[in-house]
Picture 1 (cartoon, chains in turn cyan, green):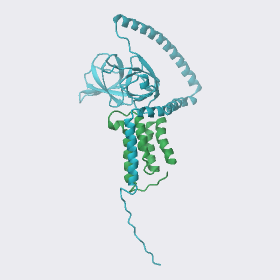
Picture 2 (cartoon, chains in turn cyan, red; picture 1 turned 90 degrees about the vertical axis):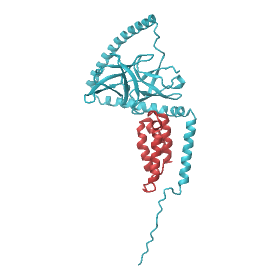
Picture 3 (cartoon, rainbow over the protein chains, first blue to last red; picture 1 turned 30 degrees about the horizontal axis):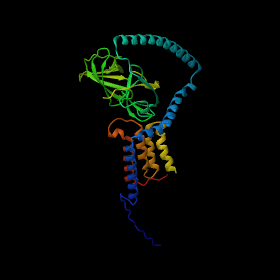
Picture 4 (cartoon, chains in turn green, purple; picture 1 turned 180 degrees about the horizontal axis):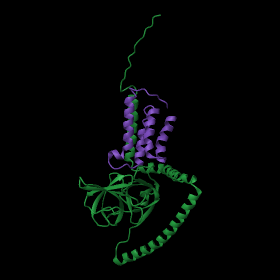
Length: 270
Length: 86
């Protein structure tokens, strides 16, 4: 039996027959992009829509933290409970001290005619890393509550953790001071020496300074302006004698994963 | 139908669990779906929601990633005939 094979040439045309269809889809997507960009409320719409899902995710991660407790030893839980009770008692005493110092501070401010601390708005955190990118937070209030871009975000009355970078109607995004590439200008609280600190991501900050610069582990770095706020705490110092410089590695003053509420300080725009 | 479901998963799973899940899901979309242009839309919507920094690339990070992935898939689809599942 004689068999005949016909070799068929397959055309590998990069711009195939469905090219037009693809182009149309691209154009539709482009139009959607433009419409979304023109509409200022696009971000608000997306934020409002995603808000319950983000909160759900946040609840999931909080529940996940509780899982190890189910497998913990009973004696360990009892000792932990005792430690927590001791801590509560200590905190209660600290709170009493704090209140007396606060009232004294208030009285001194009035006597010296120093402007009181601005109106701080407390806002809940609804998402943090790993749900959203590192060194950012999502807050459950936005422009509808007077939160605007560049407002300062505090973790306490004097602890600065970042600033508002993105706002929508009901959600605001915070970029922490440790966000990679963020530069802050501050000074060492102990010596008042100015320095430029740079965020390196993952809750860390660093500063490159001359080797003879007076800075030690535990030094607090503050920023000036209307309020003097603590922005970082020095955690380690690496000296490089060959270059004549040293790197001071710092961290944020608070553990972001442990806080649920932050305070917004409104900056005055010119 | 599965294509729409997968698109919804690509949008909502990163929002609920973690933003970086968009990257493996987009890659999976390209593997499972033939030229899934919808991931560009998903990337764009997620870019509106997340903050990766200032500047053009950081502001449109996921959108640009999706576009690059689709362009790559478009050219590769002419050379490599991977299986279309969905």
